[in-house]
Length: 259
Image (cartoon, rainbow, N blue to C red; front, side):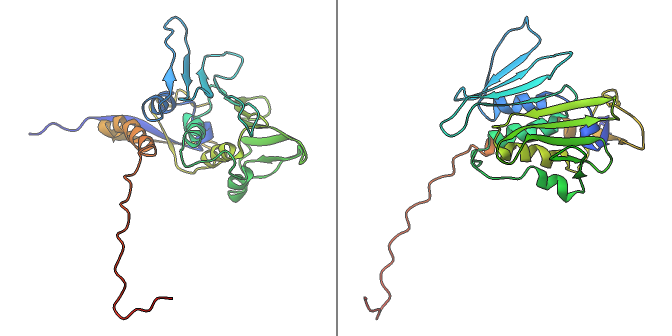
């Protein structure tokens, strides 16, 4: 009798902004293996440092009990001042990965105009009491941009379970390209559940009125292969397509007239 395929118990969580942080490897391994980022090696420090091939961007993952665990710094460029983005410990890795995936996409351009509010408004986020803010339909997520139309400022995203129970915060500096913020908002409202394997231990709440948790057995090879598929998919973006041969000149059709 052939061996029974091994399965593991996983949770599928919605909404994703209350799913807990997840596995940091979802971000760090593709940056290293698929996008050419290099990493520092300091085994005595509980942190990860990854820098982009051109040394313009630096991603830092460092446990900060009272601060943001993830910080992305980008150097100034000819048409844009330096900018940053940071994310709290329980920010789902799928949301952070949406930003790093967009940043490393060869087809993306920092000058692209995107409205980060659009994905939120499409799923019913409504104006909040503060100026220039939106709140999710269930009241557990909130976004605000400081400043005004003439001088827009930083973006602040907050997930919370009431006014006194913040879960995580994401911050984008005023000069962060809007297409990166829009990538974050699109991932934030993506209805697809995210997978977790910690038996719900990372969930900020198990209240079934707030979080939907579906536990099921999944083939272990599927779980193990998900990250590999992600790496291959991102690496394929950097593959250079073969140059197409020059089209051969066709002889003029018979009885054709030149002009």
